[in-house]
Image (cartoon, one colour):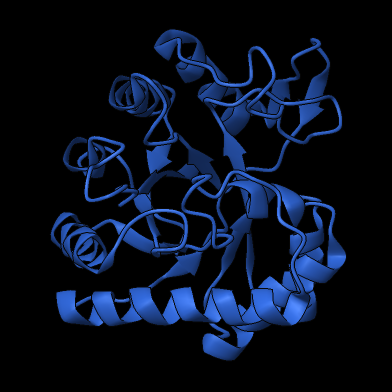
Length: 251
């Protein structure tokens, strides 16, 4: 039994890191690197790509809405053609940084509000998938299973990998509890580690109302800016290893 462990990194704001990237790179198997639209900059992208190469961590493009003031976590009504252009711009920026660091992009994971919007918004999902296809049709898309972006990825010939969140609460329909709601973010490392094992071994997670949800999992995410993120990631890795699960990048 195998699973990927990913984290959102390279998310500097005005040059200040929002996470302990160095510590997280030592624990995870894939890193979703901010491409400058919600966080990050050229220097941070190059440094992150270099860390990924040096640690053997798979490099993912963490594309988002152009919303640095809201850290990409505010919903945006955007023309699909503009969104396609914005995604392409971010992929090109990270690709340049990766080449400078001697590595390459291995997959794409949308960020924040864009990630949540394309669970149900077919037009925006199609724009994101089409942009990735045009840039590099061999790049897998990472997102929520049974979503609009999963369908759009298949329609554009992209491989799709299903993600589950160990540090975020779920609604009974399988979507994430909005960050503005109480209990949306989990910070108990032991509880998070137990959820990770259940997700991989049983393919289930309890929704915030106690409803059991079936979840297909190729990759587990621990957000880099969640309080205690490094401790949680270490606890997750140790618990999965103890349960006989091998951690390796999906891409």
